Image 1 (cartoon, helix red, strand yellow):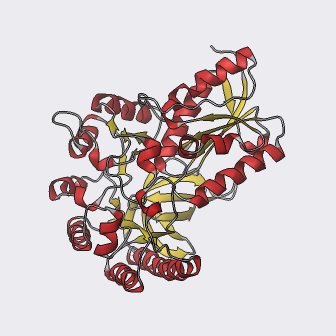
Image 2 (image 1 turned 90 degrees about the vertical axis):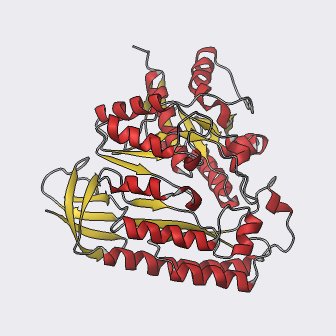
Length: 432
């Protein structure tokens, strides 16, 4: 058994892939002899796993780092993730940051911390854009386990920094993933979420392997109660793939990024589909899977987006049968093609367009949740709302946040529940 080395807190910003990476770090810090605590508990070491998809994400990271240093002056601060990969020198210049560690070396971060702990090394920057590193198991303190099946993206959309900070596409061997799912099940997890940068590209470098075959293998060779796929592009959702969702263990939830409802904007973004294809795939989902949740991302204010192009997007989203829309204002990312485009949209216009899309998103979200009232769905109860309150919060198979009251502990139980009424951002559910 490793000696006790101290306490550590790991904060995660951004996507489910980052959550999977943080789970890996937590597991390995525990194995090395560290005890995981909350940042508010004054840890010996604080690790921030950053996002850099927008300038807002960057600002959030800087704010978090300064806040931790102010609250815990003696805490060693380590920054990793996509922001650390993109701008390590900027992060190291922040007062209190001791170590900056890029994505490609995340697998070695725990070894580095242990080595520094043993040798008493001080402040330095470690940053490596090398050939990449193996991917490995995930672990977290929640009821749903994030499982990284691939990393990297070869698609190079004009606005996106992700290919630069996550690298080229690489897939985890299917046998390794099967074993990881089995391990998560043995640890008590009821749901496994497949995550990655570009899930639909899974297995492209392997003979006879793709996302469809991987999902089939997991369903056939493990006892996981619920399997969820975090995100797929519309051009990747074939009829053959869609038919897999007839299995009750595969959660009827699709996150299918749209980004724009204007074909001319989609072309400038270098997206690989048209609004017509998106509409057809969405219709196919609706015709195949009852009560499926289909959510989308939309970017407003992309360089050169005219009033007419925005109206095309707004009208398309109005007519599409979406369950929710995640709306983002375009954010210039240095090093991307779009950062060199002319005709950038002013902040006032972006805000107006953003607010219109957010209002539409609220309408879509409420309409979808209301359409599910009276129906029965499997619910994974994730936590008690407040200790001792008797109210529990959970997630349906089709990604609706639900709430109920119970005299028994429901945490980490999957139960069939009837959705009976709206309660602000939740739907009230009754076990049946």
